[in-house]
Length: 325
Image (cartoon, rainbow, N blue to C red; front, side, top):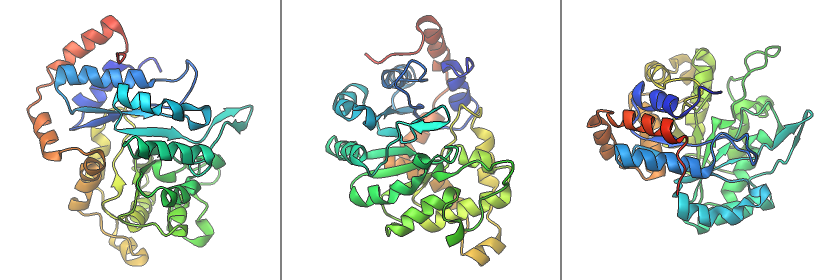
């Protein structure tokens, strides 16, 4: 864990990658064990803005609605300028039991979503999946929450994907009624159950999911095919969860080279993963959601000699994690 510091972030995200704009987020937590707090994410973005110019880095703010933090959101908006809110409904594992869980469609969830809309930061990124099959980590609350809050844009991190258990084997295949409770199918099922589809206010995100699937092309084809079927080509969002897995370029290159086999498209009706669709997933869709001028962002990266990295690293070594003031 000691290696996941600011200089490693700069290496993985800005040096050994082709990133125009990155979004800095964090894991949850209300204790000192949390990795980054909202003031640290905003401070890091301010540092990059000051040294590299604005627009290369954006930041979330983490909210724990079940801990009363909905009341803090207005102050966080004004102080930290988040582009969206990141939430984890999972709770905490204590003695083999999940405690402190909540739902997007319970009282805490509705109050939080109402506040996100009131504050005019109506982008909510919710961790769903990668949850050891815990019930509160399932995306089954996404459909009712999205229906009840049509003016909020939901980005569902990991798309409900769960890493396969060793004694079970691969679980990601085509969607069926019998497998609606499995992995990504849970997200597809809640979308279907609540009449949501392409062009609606829910997007599926691929962070960690694509990293796990890249070694298993058949499962990868099913997951991408199912997501394109359900959400459409405009509502699938790229993510890497770097720096957990190192620089982003290898997984980007693998995605650019990937194709959904024609036999699966013919059998299951999956849309083809064309180069145009890939470009939307890799950046165009997120640019729309986050209000980014994609051409301007590419221009900034093209003109960036990365000379600011040395100054940023020196400041980090002198002062530690940047804190927003």
